[in-house]
Image 1 (spheres, rainbow, N blue to C red):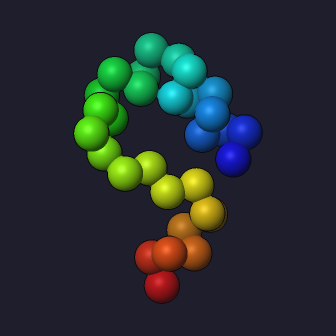
Image 2 (cartoon, rainbow, N blue to C red; image 1 turned 135 degrees about the vertical axis):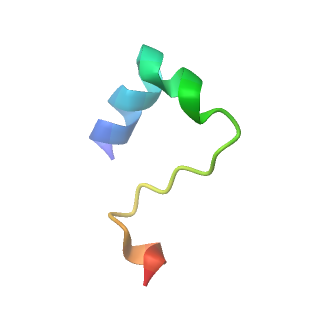
Image 3 (cartoon, rainbow, N blue to C red; image 1 turned 60 degrees about the vertical axis):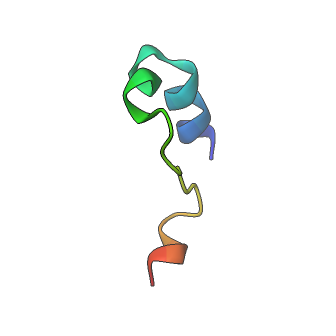
Length: 30
């Protein structure tokens, strides 16, 4: 979860606007 928070706080988050970012470790994919 911390990694996702750092990513969203950084400049790279500009590329994921409007996207649903799941931070459950991929559990929801199954």
